[in-house]
Image 1 (tube, helix red, strand yellow):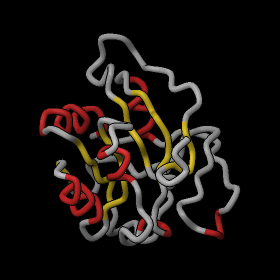
Image 2: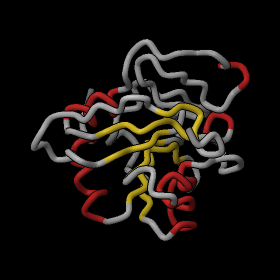
Image 3: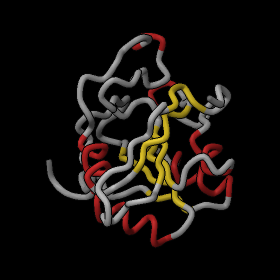
Length: 163
């Protein structure tokens, strides 16, 4: 485990469905996205030790689309800002193909720009927030970091939609 990047590494990252849109693609998430059995502390001392009891909607959709979850990265408290965030470093070091992170005021897009990747903040409401721990739900969205526009489009095609 790279403790300077991850708060949790998936010891046995199972791949999802074969011949699905995201088969062979690996993802990291911030620890404010619920993955059943993973610590979901959102970078906050108040949530220290909290373990998710179910998957967030986006996680369920990624699994069904064949994606592999590598682990959870470090993040600023409740996703506000980039202080201490290591999500983009996981991509830069080749630990994952894509990343999900909170984007309130440009965090995902700035993090992507820092490493020469693509960052995207979908229109509010396009991607479900069920299973996300947040600070300002009216502002934040599921931001996406990817190496190519095609990866981003494929991922958004999987994640978008109502619960």
